[in-house]
Image (cartoon, rainbow over all chains, first blue to last red; front, top):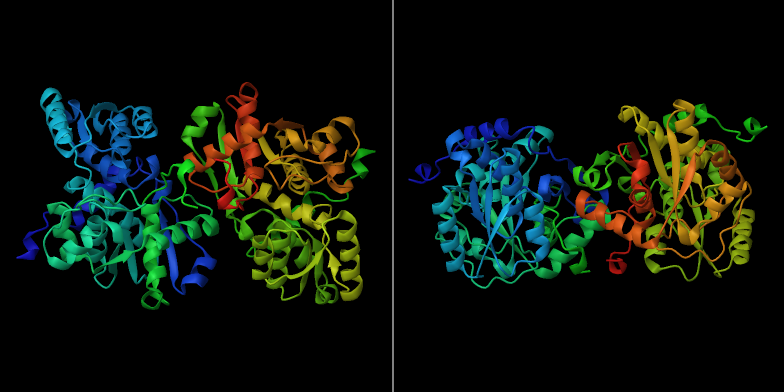
Amino acid sequence: MKEQISEITLSDIIDAKKLIVGHVTRTPILNSSSINRITGAEVSFKCENFQKVGAFKFRGATNAVLSLSQSDAAKGVATHSSGNHAQALALAASHRNIPAYIVMPNNSPIVKSDAVREYGGKIIFCEPTLQAREDTLNQVVEETGAIFIHPYNNYKVICGQGTATLEILEDMGDIDCIIAPVGGGGLLSGTSLAAKSIASNIKVYAAEPEGADDAYRSFKSGAIVPSVNPKTIADGLLTSLGDKTFAIISKYTDDIFRVSEIVIIEAMKLIWQRMKIVVEPSAAVTLAAILSNSEFFKGKKVVCILSGGNVDLAKLPF
Amino acid sequence: MKEQISEITLSDIIDAKKLIVGHVTRTPILNSSSINRITGAEVSFKCENFQKVGAFKFRGATNAVLSLSQSDAAKGVATHSSGNHAQALALAASHRNIPAYIVMPNNSPIVKSDAVREYGGKIIFCEPTLQAREDTLNQVVEETGAIFIHPYNNYKVICGQGTATLEILEDMGDIDCIIAPVGGGGLLSGTSLAAKSIASNIKVYAAEPEGADDAYRSFKSGAIVPSVNPKTIADGLLTSLGDKTFAIISKYTDDIFRVSEIVIIEAMKLIWQRMKIVVEPSAAVTLAAILSNSEFFKGKKVVCILSGGNVDLAKLPF
């Protein structure tokens, strides 16, 4: 029965890649001999922190926007997000010269709303509750006719995120496994579907903060466990899985590793110090999974997907 | 008469490149559309923060070490430095399997001495005075027969630093100017000699902190003005010019821009936030020069050499 769950296949991800090429940055894959020495593994990093808007989210948003028919696109797109998806959708929409309506809680940091405006997004503030967010979004969609682009539980978004893995497999020789962070599961589901469809021997793992381990609990129990009061520095990984991402992850992801806050910060520091790149805590969970499971990953060729690099430099954990 | 001053030419820099290729990282040249928008210039960044040991210094140190005869090399190399040159020389020596004796003041941060040791350097601590440093170095050289490799006032070092510019000119189309930071002048002299010898129309500028503007004053007065009590966050730019670097800079550098501390920090933050890379304050002075002279650089194709990325993450200025 599982075979029927996923309504997308590798060919959809390949189509996404064709559609978004030239719009998204083909991000480099970097490594560090000192991180290899420290971990005992051969670790490569897919640097989505160098992606436009500083995060992989631009892939999915671009695929969703460019996939719209002319008449649908004309009305614009809408979403609720205060994070990287908001900026990504705003920029993707501006590239197609269509409006992007972004519903944000009225307690969002000004730096976030400023960034969305910088990319041309139209912000509609709402009360900081789930109900207000959904009501406001529905109202915006009704009034404008804009198409709602969910941050992750959307097949076009999932396929866009999967394009990072197509690039990994084009650029790398044999690899043993890929590790992606998991929040709502857009990146993880796209990664898992792409990797397993191309080379079933590649293991796909997720890394998740212990303080926001709803995906782990969902994966182990076989049913979506909502994220309730998550507590982690990895602020991109607070959300619950959606039905679409959960179905794909259940089928294609090999395992989920939980990581502690202290190791996330240690991993983040290592990446900044040794590789001289800026990554957000949500990206560092991937290296944290290796550091926390060094025997397991020893000698393995691992690719960590560094999801993004949007951090508040005034609030660093070190 | 000036023609006789410099005892090295472009061919020496080309020889250096041949000698060190495979040992040094060919660093990428990156740019940022938002930094271009903010500055009004077309700015590219030569990312020596991605160089081995995290700084351009590894180029010069490697050229100096690999240029030694077998018999000279056997005795090892020595220097006084608590900064990037110390780590660079230690690593370069370890690659040739020869000892590196590093004289460091006994008040150096432990993180610096640890880094030198990690690269295989033998540390000799001395009192934190110029006299003690020179006496200790002389003693080490006398006892071991090691060859002293000055951090910048050494032609092999200067030629090694100049190889970054050969890479820039290979990788880029027409450019209007190159901006390098200036401390002791090793990078600036190598950059100036390389660029002017290949394309005399390319302007070569230096950027220097106002609080350590001895190179500016030397350049303008025509005689070396020592650096006395320099005060700047750009801790790689505290030293005085040497006679060799001063001669080359006087001949080939077009101008030196002084930049304030506040703009250095602003430039550093811009690079971290927009480009997602870690650079040290000494690297950020180059962008600071553009920010401080926006009319002058408007519309120009500029390459900033980002000298390095070694910062103490616990002591960031933002």
